[in-house]
Image (tube, rainbow, N blue to C red; front, side):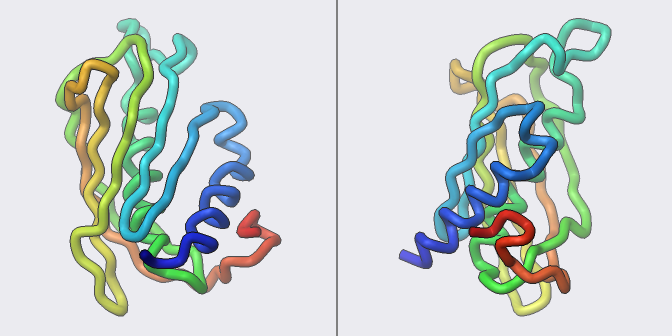
Length: 144
């Protein structure tokens, strides 16, 4: 069951991040899991008329990050490393990224994430390592 109040605070914190004013994603957090939904827009494209890799990375890292931070209730976690695999180009629709913690210890968390398009095709996947920072989860960073 975890701590639903913590999950809602993480969701609100995500919503206050200035970068999300531009991308307009939605986040849902649960214990060891997170899901992000994003509508593809043309301004996210590279010159060949498809979604830029930076957007794939953002969705994957955010989903894995919040899955990891769902298990840490006192401080912000940090991405230590992240590997992305692009499996299919995207040029329209709504994407869903799902992150899940696959390993958690006192010092290190590992989370995997996958992005699917509206037809259920996997378009990218990634895996990241995360660690606790010294930044407390407080209302000053949107955790409220």
